[in-house]
Image (cartoon, rainbow, N blue to C red; front, side):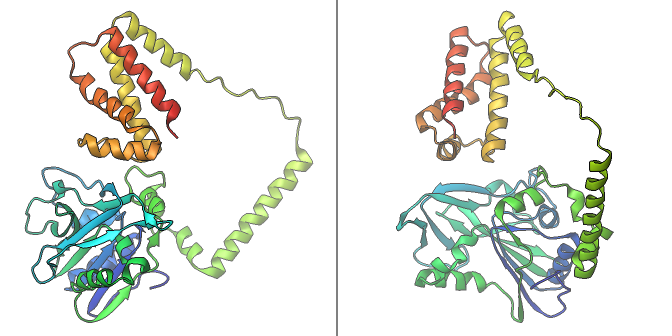
Length: 356
């Protein structure tokens, strides 16, 4: 497909493969209508649109909202299917190679808390390493959505290998008969898809709306007219400013008093012997820093978090393990000694200095 996602009147299947997926509301509605009429959609992506998952994961399991996919760092993945018709006697092994050697990468999967055996809920039909769900079936209307968390297994590197072709053919074996609609238009990078689709993304959500400016920019003649008008306006402002520009006064930058504020709060906690509260505040800042800098959620599984944080930050795993252990245990203490607070603070300083 190219351009806007059109109406899909014929019977068949919709296929999308890419790191990130972004759909406008009208594209999403066209796809939902197509599948609801009894057709099939196969989507292999690391980032799925939140607007689409609102319809596919409407009945939440135990109030667990859709927060995207999880991932596991490793150099290889063992994949297989649950249904006997597609299941292989031996797992399909995919090795990630860079510079002619096995390299650790991130293999996405869907956490188990998304599955609660609802009639219209998410159902895992394929797993990685025998335990992580990587291939889902979702009933919608009269048709089905099939979601795959690892689009890299469909790249040329794996498809040219016999077992890669065999695995891909079994995945595509879930498609229904008829026309296949291959979507290239909705493909974006993983980071762009995260920014566009995430409820915490930086891109304004109102860009999805079908407003007049979007229509103008999608029509080449109107787009050129719009850019010409904006360019002429900018030129007018530049030359008008050069003719009537006054003396520019010296404007001193505002003083950053945030450091003094943090120091004052720290002294207040320290003077009142609030060592544990001071440590808890440091833990909150650490979790926020890790989430914003490395896009890593602070998970309940410490081993997985330690490996991922050490890999991304470049800090030795032993130091990361000690800090994660302290961050999980200190809030549970009834009190915290001054010596323990000092040691925890020294570890944090070393981590921030070594983190890349």
